[in-house]
Image 1 (cartoon, rainbow, N blue to C red):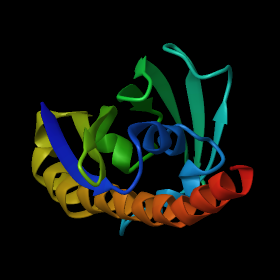
Image 2: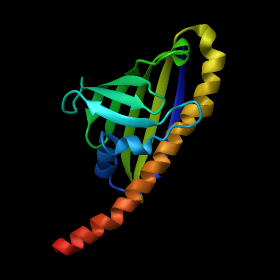
Image 3: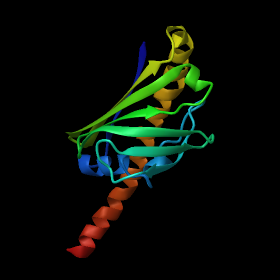
Length: 167
């Protein structure tokens, strides 16, 4: 049995800029600040250069460690990965999660669609997992996109100023 969480937002930057922030192991952690029971990301470590099959190690604010294996990578439009390594009590609810990010150009920047599909550990976990994921994970995802919006908006004046200096 699965539960899906969705978040989407138009971000004020090109698909390339959005994608680069999304996959940046140094900059992205500050944008995922968590929500309620979902912890913030403190750091991301890549085992190899980013490519399909690469594993990223995620260190969360609550001390938990997760692994993401990249399953799709198409710059600057798409990224997907499988998230594993949940610890109890969350692991009692969810065995793994599949994330899918898509970025498309929009009139005022880029439309980002982010979907997480959580595979439950048991059919009996559904009521509690649905509550936790829809109340906390969906909000953590939307908060992350809002944080990305702020980072990208702050980057825009610097890039404009830098381009004018080089002209």
